[in-house]
Length: 115
Length: 115
Image 1 (tube, chains in turn brown, cyan):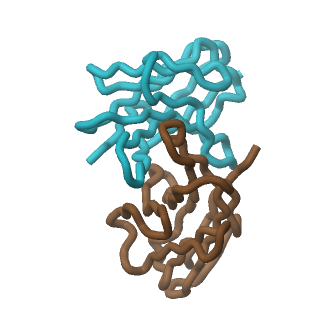
Image 2: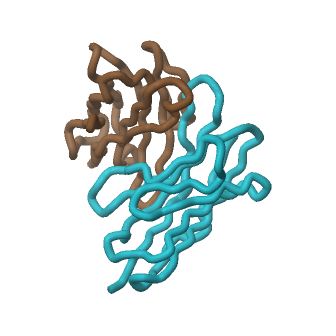
């Protein structure tokens, strides 16, 4: 069964450093998402991406964040200058299209620790 | 804006007990409803979903949920839980419209099933 993959599984970085989290969505999916889950809190939407542009973003997704689909398979989340409060589990998700495509498939997540 | 409330944050049950987890949502339009499960150390997995039709939906592992439109509720049930059901359960909703279809999650319910 196809699945969403994410790398790395765990990233430790120092405050102020740039990080890039990588995701490979399911191959025939058209919509891509990033969510995050701070320890002990709920899963929060960050951004959705379709047709090579952001379709929606939350207030969390400020100028420090960017997303890109650099080729036909990868979908990346970049945090330009990390802060302590960016420490969280980051989940990538993807979905297909059409009425049967509302279901989002999640990757295993990248645990980001900012020190 | 859409929001989701899960009323039970921690639930402890003995094996074979029945389970019902509450979920209420707030949104003015038509929604799709989901329950996701996160087993310890694993990623979010879809348990079941409701898009339209029969409001009683059956998912994997013996779980079911009932959509009651008048109560804006989508409670999760299982007649007899097993130790392996120990996990965190998230109710989620997205708006059934074009665009990003971001998921809004509830705060989650941590279920512990004791032998």
